[in-house]
Structure formats: structure tokens, C-alpha cells
Length: 201
Image (cartoon, rainbow, N blue to C red; front, side, top):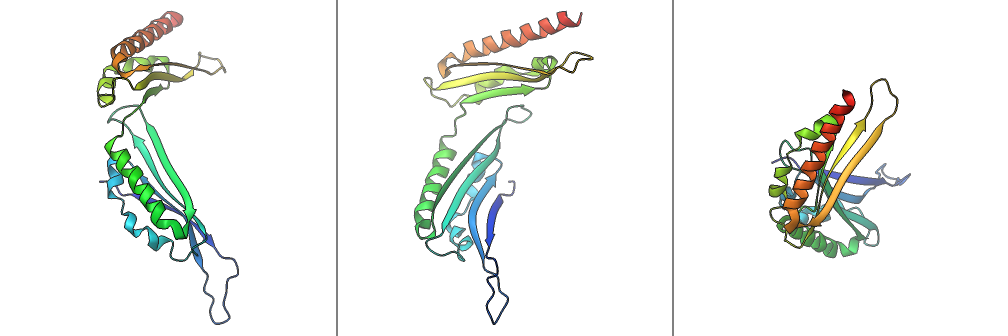
């Protein structure tokens, strides 16, 4: 399991020196856990959070958060990110931690993707998209849940031209219409490939 990264924003008290020592008080204002997958959220130990805010007064505002870097299938071009942050005073840390725990449980138990967007560098790469993998991607979604399929071409550049053009094609419908959405995307990508070939000739 990949290591969880913790982002800590520190506020350093300026010129907070006592006459007897040169001690500087360091206060943590934000604690963000960064993970690579939803399943790794379960490894976060929220009981240790209070230690990070020991140098803060009860009235100071702090932030707790989670960031999931990438949710994607192996060898897939699809990448999605999600984050959740809350702010409150140090005296309310127990409430903040409780909210984060509830969000964590809800996310790990019901992480259902709503959008599948492929991004490629050229029209030629559209043919590398396997639209059938969308069936696995959305397999846990409710039939009436709205989902989105799409593709984006980063750059369509003609030879010896300085003109960069971007294009995209995105369709949405309820999950029960997934077969139709897949068919539409296959037809679109195929038509773009054929159109590009004719242009080259």
C-alpha cells in the first residue's frame, strides 16, 4: 500500500522570543491527508489529529482535509480527483474529526464514478480507447443515476500550421442507457478517425 502523504501548513510566530530562550512557537493551521485511492482512506488514523494542533489555542481556526489523487483503472487514460475540507476552531476538533470519519466511511462504501472522460493527444489516438471498459467502470451505479461518457482531443494540428484546435464530445444519460452511450461514443470516434484519414489523403 502506498504511503499516505500529509500536507501541513505551518504558521510561524514572528519574533516570539522569550527573555530566557530563543524558542519559536510553531502552529499548525491545516492538516490535509493525500492518498492515491479511496481504499487508502481507511488507513488514516484520525485519533492522532489532535497532536498536530497541540501548539494552537482553542479559539484558532484550523482545517482538516482529504485529497484522493487518482481514481483510475490500470492502463486507463481516465483520471479523476476528489477532495473534501472542513474548517473550525481547535476547541471543536472532536466535531471536525467526527465529520471527516463520516465522510471517509461514506466515500469508501459508496464511491461510484459519475463521469468517464478520455483525454488523448491526437485524433489518431481515439482508436486506442476501449469503450467497453465503461461497463466495468459504472457497474456499481444505480440504473437511474446520471452518468457521462466523453472524449477530448488535446490538440489537432495540421502540418506546418501554428493553429492548435481542441475538440471534445460528451454525452450523458441514466446508467441503464449505458449501452446506447457506448455505441454513440464508438460511432463518434470511428467517424473522427475516418474523417482524419480522408483529410490526410
